[in-house]
Image (spheres, rainbow, N blue to C red):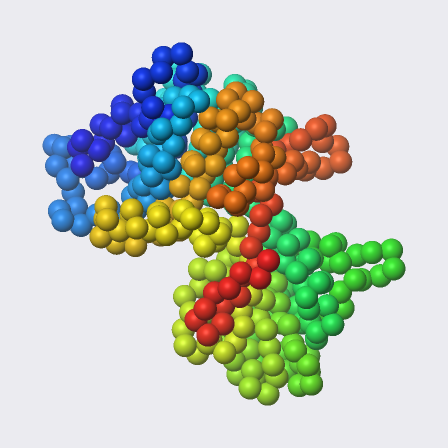
Length: 390
């Protein structure tokens, strides 16, 4: 562990070989939360015995994926790439400290598994120093504007709702659609985006009815809006997981008499209740920015390598670390310092399946505010099988 603590900051990982001195040399900063300082006491002794600190796992999983991506790019003849890893939860990796270092000025690309203040700081550094910054996991723009060097991998809620709406319009437009929500500000935001998408000069494109409820929800509230003669599409217009569970139970109570397809928000992917056998015969649709099966040949390779190294299965965070690093280091190797101008390069689409598009936050914006990955997957869980619908 002490060796790891030293290497996190001092030992860069190389791609593109280390011998060709005439080749361009690029530097990538990987900012991840590993919490190494808290793993040791003042005497330098490891605090956790034979166990591992849970707070460190997401960062280390992401780092493992990034390392494997670098290993697969190490023989590229076009350039040398150094990956410098910073533990943002350590004293040495603190962003205020790193921002003032000469190394930050020499970076050609920043990849961050960050949120909150760290996200804001890296976005500011990206804008001021013209360094492309990949926000790999934060599902928000954090109010950032006028930063065309920012690339958001984990798409915003509005983008999810747009993709979900398009899928409903094309594939479920003639079904009996019911929008179920709580009467609060959080659910207002979701409903308002959906309503705006549904507007047209000739009236709403999609016909649906709305059930407004308090935090409580039961099948007798839902029943009057269902139709036994056709498919009922029940949409949970809420990000709240506790409310989603209540809606799931309400649908189960009446599903035998009323055929239901339950449609949810991106937060529903992580709800363990929907994986239980009770829900086997209830189709549940939801959107996600990440689907590891879409990583083409890399999906099984990443799993095999991770199992050999750790004797365990990788989480989605490992795949996200691989995807972000492989995609953007590949673009750096191909386009060098013109990386940001070549985000539309489709040559990697078959391997990493990312689709970055420019975003203008408002009509008043001059030019691009940032780039966002618009590749959203609609997944269906039914009979313990998850299938990709788009």
